[in-house]
Picture 1 (cartoon, rainbow, N blue to C red):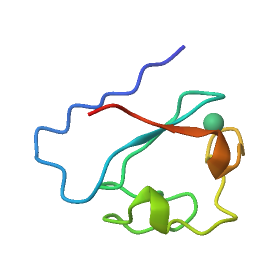
Picture 2: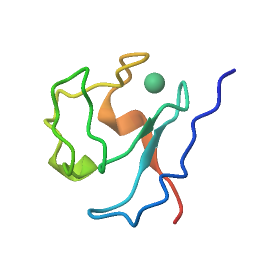
Picture 3: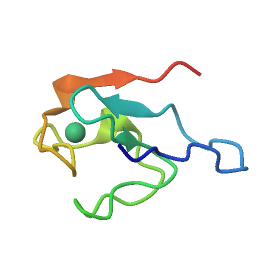
Length: 68
Ligand SMILES: [Zn+2]
């Protein structure tokens, strides 16, 4: 399994990261989601309800908040 590097070296500007409960892909609001054309700075809560994991297509409900 590949690991995700969470160390950006810069303070988070908006909100927290969420992690897919299926494939452990992390959604980082400071990066957005190129796959779904979500611009950086978009909080997880602001993602469209039909947004799914870019890696495994799991729905938002399968994502878990990553403890800060
Ligand atoms: Zn996933």
